[in-house]
Image 1 (cartoon, rainbow, N blue to C red):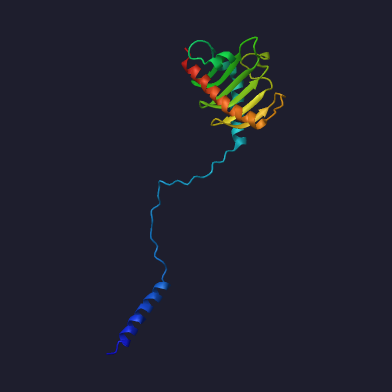
Image 2 (spheres, one colour):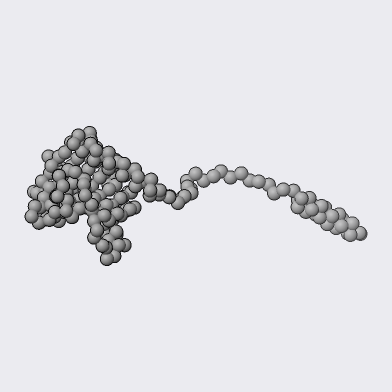
Length: 196
């Protein structure tokens, strides 16, 4: 029996199939994208644009301060923390319609002259001004030089020291104000919310 011919035929057959499959394009299998996976793009914040928007909002608020609703709240009694009670005598809450836009904190007379002003946009802290000689100007007006802090989602995005006071450690000072001022603003918001 001659086994060489069928073996040769089988070998040639396998060779032809292998060769023909090498010349074919690979089959594409369609896959459906996984919609649960979302690519995270780095969020870029245009600080100059945000600061410009905050500056405009603050200027607009100051321009119409006499037309805003002002509520004076004495910082005494239940619901006022000891820290706030020791530092501040009262706050003025300014609303434009139903939106709170500005809070000004006043120290106890004879103890300090420092004032702090908090500006809000859509219920969020966006700007704080601290003046060590704040009582020299008319109450309610944002006038004079001091330290200015611009915030975006409780993150300090710009610090402008116009007070003339030189900082010993600017990075530490920024970190301290970034952690302190949004917390203080939230305390004031709670006080205003609960005031009668």
